[in-house]
Image 1: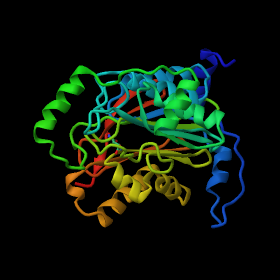
Image 2: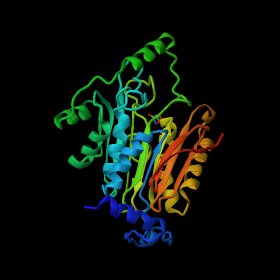
Image 3: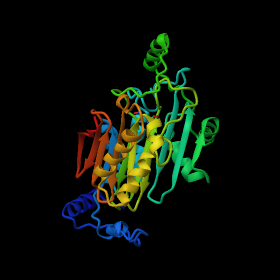
Length: 329
Ligand code: SD4
């Protein structure tokens, strides 16, 4: 097992550019050799997540720093937010749909390109762990609604009431006017998307949410859709999205970012180009938020949103830092 001392030594080597990945892949059909770059790619263990989820990053870094797998890191990281009743966009304490039901979406993807997802799942506190089991125990990628719940219960998850008093009170206040405006509140949303690189240089990603507050019953956003809310290609990098899911779905934003990085863009350029794609093609973007984070194999990161105020947390070289993304407006 890798010890912490080994990890620190390795991190020091990484900082000096002396630890290298050993992924060797052929040239792409475009003649570019982006994948072959990874032969000489220094390993920079990293955890990157949306909004100000310090504790989630910390939990993920614990796994990475002990030599664990990036997949375990992202699962453990986002579980912190799923269990937190104060975060009203994820898991327990999430805002309900317009009928008062908390319905959850989540997905996860590993370094081999395996992925699992649940959507429209009710009464289970940790949808990310159910998504992981869909990936590992079934031949499928997505389970939805009743079927996802049945699968979770069969696998030992407990049914719980996820609607907190605070979320219920807010929903009841909303019902007085019940203005149904399918736009995400620009100021307050905290869906967590997380990407990690472990000490072996492997990449994984996770995304989990209770979705848009007071959505129509049955509405599913981008977060559980592989390539929309999250995508990872271990040869290139990964991306996650937050904000108005409908806008992300129409652009398949996370997949697009990874493909733009494959073609040679930096994570920052890829995030900006993907936000431009939304603002060029989608009407009304002035009134909603979408934010993307990207991480490439070298540990370089990118972040960009439509609106100002998109914050994120980056854990690298032993430091957990809050940062603010640039924006289109
Ligand atoms: C959704 N993208 O369901 C999610 C919401 C979100 O921060 O990201 N909120 O549309």
